[in-house]
Length: 61
Picture (tube, rainbow, N blue to C red):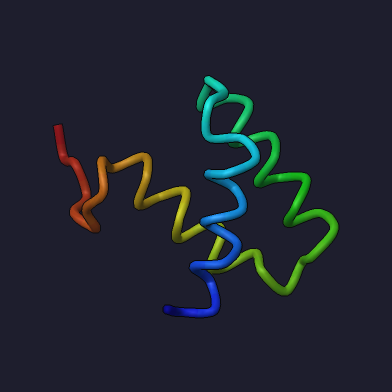
């Protein structure tokens, strides 16, 4: 088990039954970065990855 799995498991256990919007998630991620600016780059990478449907490909449409 990776160390990060514990946080992911806690998230699933505590909030797994909830439904959220992507706007809510973006707000939560922004609040996290505001409080933890050292994590700005990885959070931006995660947000971009999620926005692109789980790929790193740039959509040129």
